[in-house]
Length: 185
Length: 310
Image 1: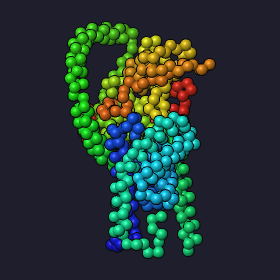
Image 2: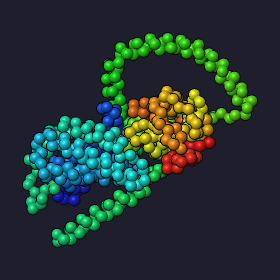
Image 3: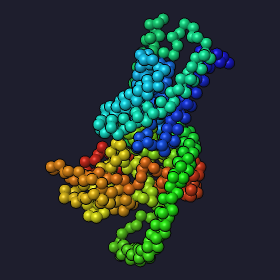
């Protein structure tokens, strides 16, 4: 079988790994972080992962990771299938867009970007829920869900960003330069 | 070439958007049955979640016990005294119970018989803070069915929303889709208690001249077809100013600490487990292997699902 980079087997393995990773992230979120609230706030690992991936690898990857993670979370929740996927994809897209505009090495950048996209994601989710006839109050959602989640996510982003950056640099050194392609973006 | 590729990409994205919109539309309302794909994903993730939840629970328990040893000693002493006084009271209550049973048989009231509590561990919570649901490690195989009430020793927790073979999704009382009929224990005024996003409960009186004061205990109503009567729902923390022409409203603190749920019991009718994988599957320790329905309709509460009217 052809396992070479760019082959169909390579892409299939990559997609399988991404789905498994998404399932694991969602399982950790649901089973572990539900026991670690800070001031009543819970993090949202799907948005955090989408934001960090967007910052590291650009819009397409951020949106893709956000969509897959959010969709797995939606399947687990059983309500509004696709709403979390769509909002997390938007978050990844925005983070990827932001990464093109700013210098990423400062830890303040991921902290700010992740906090921002967390708020955007949750308010997008609120908008989708309201559009489908569910009553989600805007002010309460912003103050009691979106902002606390954004703060928790920003804290986790500050912890994880140096590790992500190192992992990403190692990967870039390992990978051959793309031939005639625009990289991940 | 580039034009064709861009057209294909637009087509795929458009198709994806349509699929997502369709999925949202189809799942915006409570469903009694999950799709096979959802069931498969949940069942596949259940063992991992059980394992992770157990690990997290162990770590937290270790931290908690280290932190609270002294408090536990004091509490132990206080509880010993309380046990002594409760033993005396228990004797009195046993007498009252016998008397009550005799009177009920005279009046022809039927007791809810055949109910069985299936203990279960909470193994997951939703990713989004909007929904107040938990996943438990008991499902169809253990006799758990949609609409069955879920309780702890402190009071009502919620009800089963959807089940797979090995797990069940429990809609908590604080979920915005939940509404439960209850009464104020002090006055017996009927009320409805609704979930509010952010994990709160809001009470609405069903009679115009309802008397509510902070500290009032709200319990499940005797007319409920979902919960056994007399289960604590919560306590009134603040009474809201009554608007003209509207019944009294109040905020309610849930009787059960829903943010720290670990072990719950599902009240089954005792038939499901026997017809499923055997009666032994349901009872016992919750650590083993591991829908909606409207209970009538409350006046003015058609958009929610939950406990209802007589």
